[in-house]
Amino acid sequence: MTPAARLAASIEIVGTILERAAAADRVLAEWQKHNRYAGAKDRRAVADQVYAVLRDQGMRRWRLQAAGAELTPRLLVMADASTPLAEWQRLCDGGRYAPPALSEDEAAALARLPSDEDAPLWARGNLPEAVLPLAEAAFGADTDMELAALNGRAPLDLRVNLLKATRDHVLEQLRGEGITAAPAPFSPLGIRIPEKVRLEQNSLYRDGLIEPQDEAAQLAGLLADARAGQCVIDLCAGAGG
Image 1 (tube, rainbow, N blue to C red):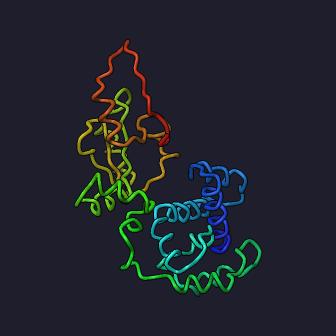
Image 2 (image 1 turned 120 degrees about the vertical axis):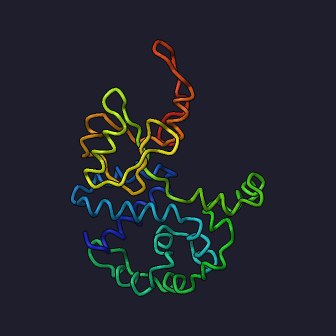
Image 3 (image 1 turned 45 degrees about the horizontal axis):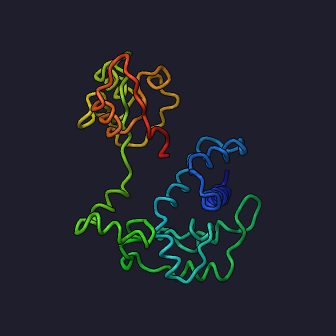
């Protein structure tokens, strides 16, 4: 895929997510299923761009509102303060697989994007403006710090299956594969990987020695102290449901 085709795909996927209020990972998986021509690098690039838009949505919406622009999926994807207008105009050339050319209104709006230094707290915290008073009531003077923490990317935490391996063994194998890994701060079952790593083809994952699970969830399981023969209900299991 060309960079223009990747941009067009990102716009399409963001539009579908917003229109259907659907889970991003499911929409991405659906797009990949129907676009088998996209290689691994293309799928990764499109996914990275889509998630960048979703993580930064508060700032992007504020930039467009301040510029008097319509909040369309196209402009949300392009309301990236680090990319110059000329680059978007180059990519949106209306060619095959590329997005249509920018209209005069779109180009003018992107040229008017304000400086991020003027962004209000709700935009910096990437949450709806109406929710900010609730956050301030909960966090008080620490609201700015707490929102910044909530917007940070979480590390990758793994749970070691102690029926099949020890944590030291898994750490040794991960490091032998060039993956930066360390024991989780609190969970005796946990391993923390600070960088984004794809595990689907890793033998440790395929053979059931490790499973991605946030350390907080690992600790909850340990605190439950479930024993053999007991009935345990994981009431909030699932992908964020």
